[in-house]
Amino acid sequence: REVRASVGAGFLYPLLGEMRTMPGLPTDPAGAHMDIDEKGNITGLF
Image (cartoon, rainbow, N blue to C red; front, top):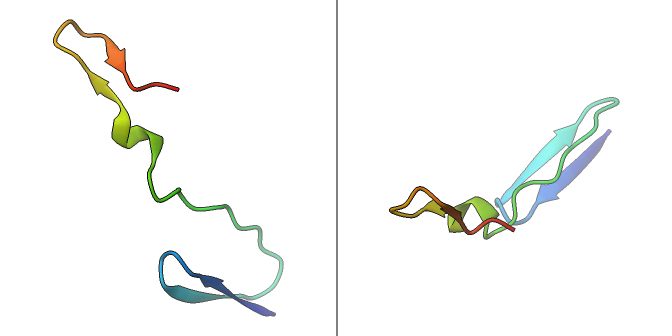
């Protein structure tokens, strides 16, 4: 049994048994910089 802190989100969560966790999103997700211009071109991709 274990308790982990999600410091960025500001909460604690318990792990009860065998469980895999996934990392969260970064503070500045890449999707926030994607857009489609007036010609239909996608901008802001990696």
